[in-house]
Length: 165
Image 1 (cartoon, rainbow, N blue to C red):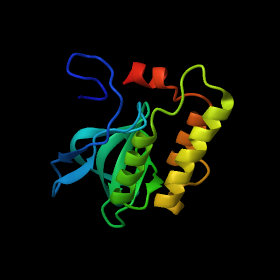
Image 2 (image 1 turned 180 degrees about the vertical axis):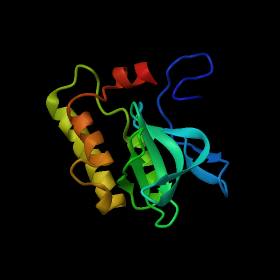
Image 3 (image 1 turned 30 degrees about the vertical axis):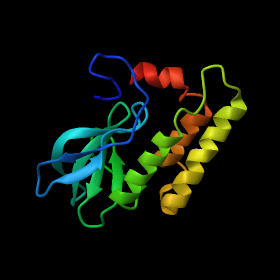
Image 4 (image 1 turned 180 degrees about the horizontal axis):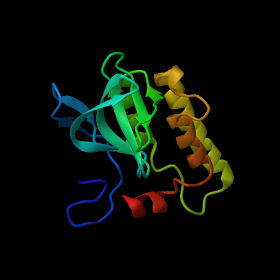
């Protein structure tokens, strides 16, 4: 399976798996992907410097975001394509992996014809998961808050997610 598609091109339900990426200094084991385009692993590791701080890019998010590991603190952060600033995703790679795995295990969230209450329930479930795994990672405007907002708006219907996988 590559980016949610089987080798014959058919969409499949996302499953949690990891990939060992090479490059920079030492290999890094990261989640292969999340649900839809919320996150996917890069092909290899890449050193990045933002504001004088060294990061290792190991993945991507959304249309133009990077997912990076802070080489000093061990935090997982995201940055836009310009790589001008960062925002916390998780306090460690292990907690990032646990959150990604938890989201995948909770999918599917709801169908296209679901009621708004189902959207809210799914978003609350993901928010609760993130708060349990890594309380400091769930904050207004942060990666996980934005994902739960999208879930709450109905953007993660099974049919829509599998269509883009």
